[in-house]
Length: 233
Image (cartoon, rainbow, N blue to C red):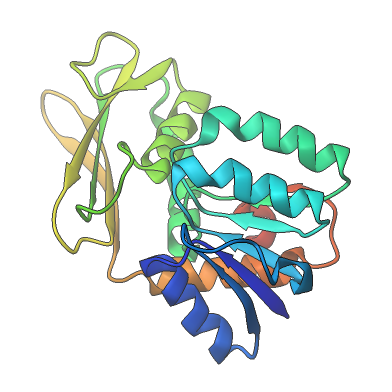
C-alpha cells in the first residue's frame, strides 16, 4: 500500500515507522514547506496535520480520488463540508478523534456507563484530559468525543471549560510536558465517586490504529469511523 502522510510531525513520523514495518511505502511526506507532489501515486492518505491545514489536505485528496484517514483535531466546524465533498466525489473518509484501539473501547465503556448513570441524579459528571504542551487544541478531540457520548445517553446538553452550569459537563484540560494522552471521566456524589480512565503510554497505539484504518478503508466508499474498523456495532 502506498501512503501519503499529510503532516510529518511526531505522529506522522510514528505512523511512517509502523507503516514501513507493515510493508507499506510512503510516497509523500507533506509539511508546510512542500507541495502535494507524489500524492497522485498514493493509494490512501493519512492526515495528522494541524487544524488550519486539515480541510485543504482532505479536500485535495477527495479531488484526486484518494481515500482519507484523518486524525487531526480542532477543525471540526468544517467536518460536514468535508463529508459533503466526499459524497459528491464518491470518495472514502474516516475521521477519528483518537485511533487507539484502547481508546475506542474506552468510548464504548464511557457510553455504557453514561447509560447506567442517566437516571441516578445524585451524581454529577466531569472530565479531565492531560496532553503534551505541543498539542494546539483544547479540550482534546478525544475529550469532546467522550463528552458527546455522555450527552447522547443523559440529560446533559453540552460541555464547557468554564464553571459548569446545570446540564453542562466540565472538562479540565491540562498541558504537561511529554504526556501522550490521559482521559478521565468522574461521576461524583456526596458520598463517593466513580472514575473511568484511559492512559496512553506512547503515540504508538494511535499510529498503529491509523495504519490499520488506512488498510481497512482501501476499496471502500462512504463515511466511516473507528467503530466500523473495529466492528464495534
